Length: 249
Length: 194
Image (cartoon, rainbow over all chains, first blue to last red; front, side, top):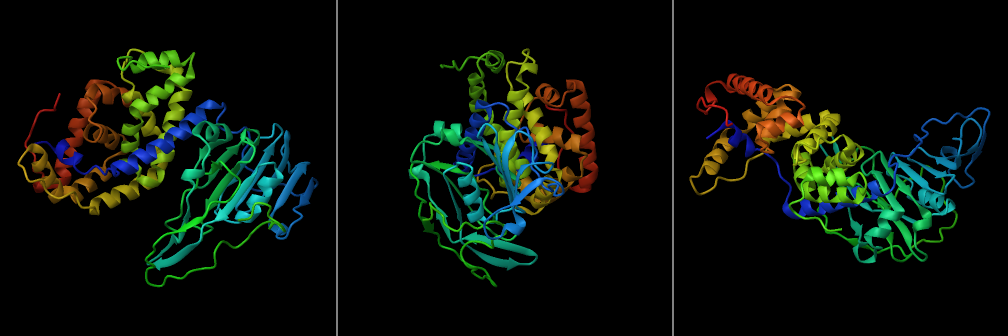
């Protein structure tokens, strides 16, 4: 008997089925990440844009106070045609048509959808409804339904051509190549617009659907804990809200 | 593209410099193992991210791979450790969890494995605390030996050191753990395994 053998017994291990699913997700990211170089974008997300002096136009839609559209001048980034900055996310359209999403918070899905569509990405962004339970010092969120896309996805090769995942967990980074999205397809993105630092948040990953219809959100059985409350579906908008969503479910 | 199972990692990595797709075969061979290791160290939330970052970093520096090593595992573990070290706080939390986590129930046979499991059940929290108290580099070495089952030579490669340095450090770690566990240390004085 050895102390090493005893220590070996303490090693945590994922369930085999979960491990394989995780491995396949990592493989997708690896293949996507090595197919297009460089992986990392040439820019760093703008968190505090310089306001003075530049040609900065506020987003036209409601909620524009927290969304900035940088087109040129000191606040914009040379070589990029458009950058939309909100407190929750930054979307940048590069000069070559590539669109990058830098996600700092899971918030304002409708504004994100509108911005992506304006950048030429046929995008559908949905909020996942959830319940909130308070436990000790934690806020635990649990989805009440899940968007099931497994049967409506484009093949892996298309996913890899459209999407490069720089980082999936917050702060997340996704790089989209709109030209690679097949006609009639759409990029789908869903997340729980839940309170910051909530436990149970879903690490999202966009998928390319084989159609341009938002999938149904399939209810899941939940057991709300003590003090659970069900907030209204969706989110509290903190940026531009589209007046009309062409892809609304 | 057909990959002979006899083709060494070193050969694949060398050929991948001209044909990058070949590196996917290295990924397929070792990603499950690296993912399990990262999962054990950091938990489910970061396992995918850190494993992906490990292989992307490996892909990016594959031109520096030492072809003298046919098996890429030690090299990949070395890269994984560097990625893991960026998430020190998460690992500390994980180790705290380990101290209170139950070990699977006892096996019904009396093999060494069953004995080790029973001992782990009894000593688990204190052993985990002793591991958590080790300096980071010592902990890396101990977990490479205990959890990954690398040989001393492979661990030396992963840690960019020599085999004799690994043996010496492992001896010091055992002495320290013996001190931490005091009278509860149940293991006989034994020679290192290699």
